Amino acid sequence: MSQIARIVIPASGRLVEVPRGLFIHNEFVPSVDSKELIDVINPATEEIICSVFAGSQKDIDVAVAAARKAFNTTWGKNVTGFERSRLLNKLADLMERDQQVLAEVESLNNGKPVTIARDSDIGDSIQCLRYYAGWADKIVGQTIEVDNKTKMAFTKHEPVGVCGQIIPWNYPINMWAWKVAPALACGCTIVMKPSEITPLTALMLSQLVVEAGFPPGVVNTVPSFGAVGGAALASHMGVDKVAFTGSTLTGRKIMEAAARSNLKKVSLELGGKSPHLIFESANLDQAANWACLGILYNTGQDCTAGSRLYVQDTIYDKFVALLVEKAAQLVIGDGFDEKSGGGPVVSKAQYDKIWSYIESGKVQGAKLVLGGQKRPGKGYFVDPTIFTEITHDMKIVQDEIFGPVLSVGRFKTEEEAITLANDTSYGLGAGLHSNDANQCMRVSSALEAGTVWVNQYNMLSNNVPFGGKKQSGIGRELGSYALNEYTDVKAVHWNF
Ligand code: NAD
Image (cartoon, rainbow, N blue to C red):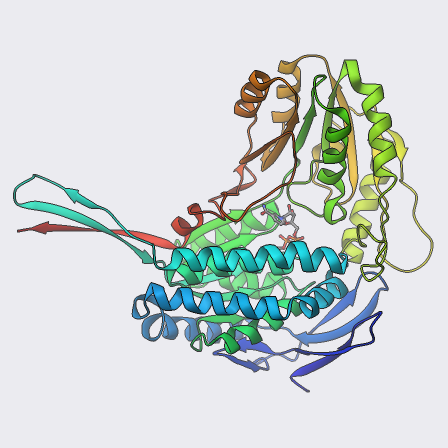
C-alpha cells in the first residue's frame, strides 16, 4: 500500500499528497506488525477522505527507541539552545509557507472553516513555535550561596527526556504546536499520538520537521487508536513524561497507567463545564457577543466553552433576547463555504452525543429558545442551541457536551453567582462581565478556574499560562510555565 494518500480539496479541486505512514526516525513507514487502517472522514459530507496506517504497541516501542537514541546522541544535552531555537524558527517559517494547504486539510478533516483554521489555529501555532524558539536559549538556573565561605550550589534545568504527547481532535494543529514547541525548546524528544479522528495535519507537519532539519528521532508521529497507541505511551517504561489533552475520563486512565509503570511525569489538560457570569452593570451588547463566542466558537468543541451562562435577574429577559438574536445569526455550514462562521461537529460519535444531550434537556424540562432541531441531509451539522429555565441537576448543566449547546440560568446576588459557578468538578475556564472594577476583582478571585476572563471570553495568548484546577487538569501549557513541564531541576552542591 502506498505511503502517500492523494486527497482532493473541495472548492479548488486541488490535489494534495499527504503521508499516510507512521513517522519514525524522520521516515514514513508502515506498521511493523499491524495491517490496521484508520479511515479519515470529512464531517461535512460523511465521506472517507483517505485512510492512514494505525500504529500498534510494537510501533510505539520502535518510536520510543528512536526518540531515546536521538535524546542521547543528537538532541537532549547534545545540542545548544541556539540550535534548538534556529530549528524551531525554521519550522515556523515552513508552517507559514504551507499555511493555506494545512488549513484546507485541517478543515477537510476537522470541519472548521478554512479561514479560521488558517488565520487563527495555524496563525497562533506559528507564533507558538516562534515564542518557544525565543525561550530555547534562555533556559537558565540559579546560583545559590549555601554558607558564604566554602559551599555554594547551582541549579540546572535539564530536559525531561522522551515525551509521549497525546492530543485531541478539536484543534489538531494548535494542540500539536502547544505540545511540540516547548518540548523541543527544552531539549526533549517526542513520540506524538494525534487523535485517530484527525491524524492528517500531524503527518503533514512531520514532513516539515524533516525539511526544517531536525535530526532523525527527535519528533516521531504515530497515528493510532487511543486504547492502543495512547495507552502504550502512558504505560511505557521508556517514556519519561506524558503530556495529554483530552477528556477527564482518559486523563484518569493515563495517570493510573503512569503510576503503575515508571511513575513518569504527567501533565493533563482535560475537560470543562465553564461558567460565564453576566452582572447587571455589564455592557450587555458586548457581553452577548462574548457569550456567543464563548459557546459557539469551534461549534462548541472547546474545552473552555462557556456552556453555563448565568445572568443577573434584573437584566435577564433583555439579555436573553439579545443573546438569542445574536446566536441565531451564526451560519453553521461546510468549512469550505465562505459564509460559514462554524463547521460541522467532528464525528458521528460527537454528533450523536450532542443530540442525546439536547434530547435530555427537552425531557428534563428545560425551555428551548433557539435551535434543537436536526437538519435533513448529510453532514454532522448542529445549529446553535440555547436552553433556559434550567435546574442545576440537569444533565445539560452538569456534563461537558462539547457542542454548541448553551444552558442559561439566573442569579440574584454576587454570592449566588459564585456558588453556582463553582459548583462543578471542573475548573478550567470562567468568565464574568461587569462594569464594577471591585466586583471584577472579587469575583475573579473567587472563581475556581485556571483561567478567568473579565469582560471578554476564550481569548488565549502564547505567553500566558493555560491549564485547569480541580478535575480539569494538572500542569500548565503556554507561557514560561510550560518550560517547567519539560525540564527537571538538578541542584549541584559545590564544596570549594
Ligand atoms: P479523548 O480523551 O477521547 O481523546 C484524546 C486523545 O486521547 C486522543 O488522541 C485519543 O486517541 C487518546 N486516548 C483515548 N483513549 C486513550 C487511552 N485509554 N489511553 C491513552 N490515550 C487515549 O478526548 P477527545 O474526545 O479526543 O477530546 C475531547 C476532550 O478533550 C474534551 O473532554 C475536552 O474538554 C478535552 N480538551 C481539553 C483541552 C484542554 O486544554 N484542557 C483542549 C482540548 C480538548
